[in-house]
Image (cartoon, rainbow, N blue to C red; front, top):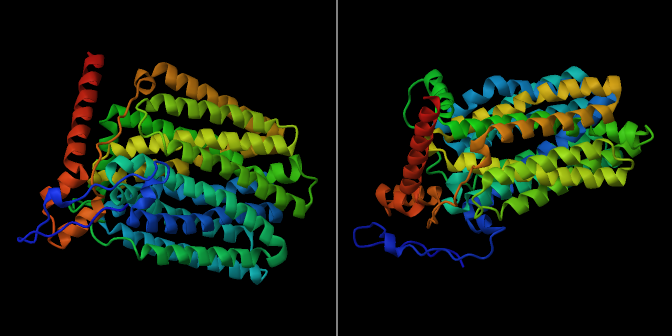
Length: 487
């Protein structure tokens, strides 16, 4: 049963009592009940179908041309490194401009870049430097797209559905990791890699079309223009002044250093560890490995979608991190492909449980006007990935992929043990479910623009006022505790 539309009073306003609370129809997919989020979810699926397919195609193409694992790291670095520089600026832009427009523009650029690569392949003119340049452009696009994409989610659902919405978003991304790599790998032989790249162009275009249905109002978070440098600095200061947020950002930035290299080494495991070196078998095994990782991530996201009522978020993240490191180690020494598929799926469950919980806790504690900037700094974790990919790739060439990934897993488990042992704040981290609200911020903004709600009523219906008060109370308590510890 959907929410009844607000009725207008004689003054043209909407009384708070006139808005009917939506009924629940199940917790796992509750956010898809919101039409705005459902359209966002659809575009998200199309976009990440194209992105995940490209990751597999780009890695396969790079390794096919060069035959060296380190070249995979080079191409990966080309996409990731721009995020270290551009992502904070992308966060400023995401807060300043209409997020809907920003998503449509950046995804149109991604479609054009994909089309260019497809034409180069079909013309038999593709070279490694082409992949590097296009990967650089893709990294820049991601730096603007992802902060807006992340900051948009809390605007499209009532606040008590936030963790559910974030988990479903990540679940959808992992669903694409199941479908896209497998379908992309299987289509290489009958269609050729150039036409599969052309398919990614169509997927990016579909994402743009879907996002034309997103709401136009309430998409600009920061209306105070203080200069790009000053606004960028405000995002960093907000994190530095919040001890809990600092810790959450730290673990979010560290985990990809250990989790991402395994995906980049999938072509090596597919061809040289579990395969016999043949191209067709390598492409098939590559799709299976990527799909197994996606299945695990999807299951982890569905699991996390039902955890919003559990307050002990620190323990949830710890359990997810331990599972991630343990099964990564087991995957690296799996004696047969079937065991490798099971272990990499189990790793995906742990990884997604950790990531969804961490992301939801961060987003729930952020004011709307600074969310894009903080999430852009979190996006810098993608830029840090080469710091993990490059040494593991070099170690793979020198010592073999099993020793390289096994060593990475041991380091990951050590880091997790140290962080949770030394940090009482992480061990005791608790976040209660946000107060149940009657509508999303985007829906309320639309009604304000139509003159059917006052801003005060909108803040009441969305729970924004109470949420801000809770954020300030927590930050004040954190500062008081930190000052007490320092003295």
